[in-house]
Amino acid sequence: MTLASSTTSAGVIGPSWALVVAAVLVSGLLLAGPALRRRYPVAWWMLLGFPAVVFRVVHTWRPLMAGCGLAVSRRPALTVVSGLVGKGTPPPQPRVPRCGLIRPTSSGFALFVRLLPGQVPEDFVKAAPAMAEGWQVHAVRVTSWKPGVVRVVASAADPLASPRVPKQRGPGHLLRVTVGVLETGAGWVLDLRRVPHWLIVGATRSGKSTLINALVAGLAPQPVALVGIDCKGGMELSLYEPRLSALATNREQAVRLLTALVDLTLDRMTVCRAARVRNIWGLPDKERPVPVVVIVDEIAELFLVASRNEKDEAQAAGTALIRLAQLGAALGVFLVVAGQRVGSDLGPGVTALRAQLGGRVCHRVADPGTAEMALGDLNPDALKAAQAITPEQAGTAVLASSDGWERARSHLITESEAEAVAAEYAHLTPVLSELHLEAP
Ligand SMILES: Nc1ncnc2c1ncn2[C@@H]1O[C@H](COP(=O)(O)OP(=O)(O)OP(=O)(O)O)[C@@H](O)[C@H]1O
Ligand SMILES: [Mg+2]
Image (cartoon, rainbow, N blue to C red; front, side, top):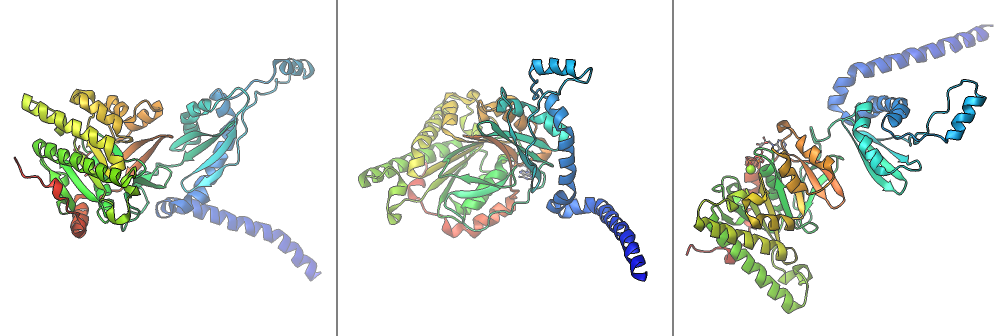
């Protein structure tokens, strides 16, 4: 008897206690939500954010697909038959693509969708903004995964608002630097051996020099020579002077330095030809000349002209830069060119130079023209993304690559940090005597 009653009471009390515990846990989680989100964003996302968004995706999937024109009508005959046989019951709903398994990522989610007959990935790319609105997430990106399947990736919040990727410490791989973080949460790596020449554009205070700071801070511990051309009187690049093998601070010096760099490149070409190798990487380690990274901050200062004499200098600088870009990659000379505007108004040489700078980074821009110049004829979404960057998001940029575009944000390396790194590694500065030219 006693046993029976205790079993009964346990049977009743058990589930009610479980309910109470669950309610306490859920309300505790909800109350602690904001604090949890701030301190442990990934845990918050997995416990609260992700389940809520899965519910929203599943709930809104059919109306969203239909609203975005991604539903496919059933065969008309079926509709007619259903009207006759069903005696007034509504005709069958149009087919929508099936929502694949929703998998969490550290700051969002991803799913695959199999296309219905007659659909192309572009239909889904167009629907991405509507998906972001419907699911109340920061952004949705759609990419073609394999024929007939697209991958939908959503980020719940802007991962670039407070990037969490640690800054690079130590030398790392030669000519490869993690300069910031990508929208996917991965490191933003500038690899000069893969893409040797870079164009960095952006309005004033958009983050160009900060990106250069990050690049210099990453290259300083490596066995490379850094050369600066800063015709704003050296205001930006003179910070790293102890680690620079040469620095030009006005156009006249810049022309001499660039001419010397072209000569250095031609000498290296002779060495490679004699050794019967196609580039300096084919030379034995002991004979390989040191890689030279040439950083130009504010290209317009080099090209804008007021007088006839300046025009000749600007032309000479432009020609030398184009030659360096054409020959440099194989001979270990790399270009990183930054500017607020890099348009044909700066002279005919600029367009030719721009074509040689394969890596493109577009920060916040003041006009759509500059974004177009930097990103070329990429997807119009890339141009929109570049124009949507606000002044508060300094350092955020759109990167163009052969397989599309992505957003990224540089590490905030302050001027004093950059100065300290340059001083720390000053002893590694290679002496390139051929670049130390006396004034004529
Ligand atoms: N990645 C970043 N994260 C946070 N803040 C940044 C970042 N990059 C730049 N900033 C902020 O923006 C300011 C301006 O950046 P920066 O000097 O790099 O701009 P700029 O494009 O070189 O401007 P200018 O054309 O006037 O030289 C910095 O002092 C910093 O406060
Ligand atoms: Mg600057």
